Length: 447
Image (cartoon, rainbow, N blue to C red; front, side, top):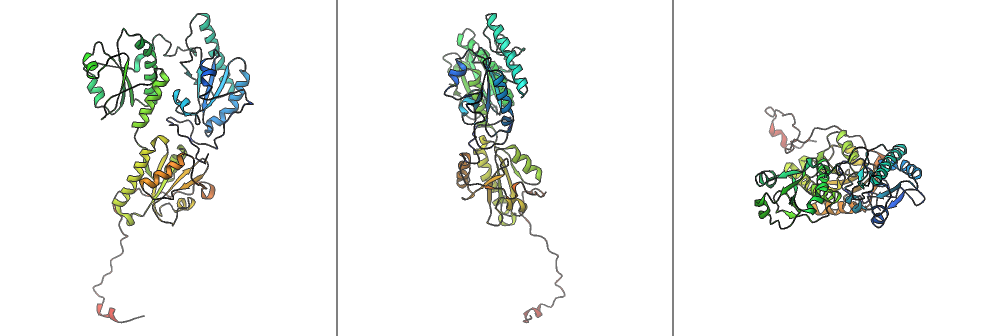
């Protein structure tokens, strides 16, 4: 595993930004049960116990801080509540299945194992144990009263309160469909249903819960909608709806495609988030004009990619823009990685260049920096789509040679004027008044 790890999970609202060597945080000597795609179904889904499951990444600082508390809680709850952990960096399919977007994410699996609930409580062993015991209490009371709803934390979850809260599902009709969906910049998942259909009734609470979660996670950029196909027959015939429920995905400029994934909230959410990341805008490419730009970009991302472009007098605006264009293309291609992207002009940040071993061997140059470990890798190939793509692909697999950042930390960053987008101008020299110089004297050889 190279210095960059293999974190390929898309992190949205990430509670964690850096990573260490990818070792598991738990071992078989702990009371925490290690869960993987191989044993998850048997251990958790088919179990009668209440489970608390942490989804973590070994490189995540918040996860490392939670580890001793999680172990303590597991020991205290031994024989009462099962406490597990999933390395979701290693087992991304499992994290994706439960819509894990940041680390650590903690889920409670109660009597209805298909409806895991997010744990929102404190990160101390006391808080974890309290939440587990109150969840256990409601699970037992549900059994007593013959209900087998999921765990309830005192508040009824939207999934359990009789059919789900449909507030975030957008009802569409023959009249409203085109103006809402067809030319929208957003991604739409549309369910065509019939009121009498049993499968549709089963899907309804899952669709409603997914709509709320997707709205929050994508800030409204992916929308879940429903069409009563028995009433809106124009739409049903336009899209060839033959059975219910049928779910179609609509994206601007593309023909609708059928959704053929699972019908649980977590399946729907995972697919919606994939669509979101595919249609998300590429990351911003920022010019290094002060220390703040470097700090905020490199601290907030697993890697920051820094290009040092030739001086404007060497390339002109057209040459510089073509380099920036290549970078933007690569930033878009690797946008799911959630890396930061920066550029500066040769000589403007000479201390930064020196610390990355760039200074003086020719421009354009590129380095990828892991600010957590203060290590970097240099682009050895050409500064072209192909060369940069190979460089970044190696990094994304944790390969490629790395070196420590000179001085062990970010050097001083100069505050500079941002590029104005124009060709450079040579410094203006004072005009010399030649009117009184006798040009004939210039032919004489003088030392």
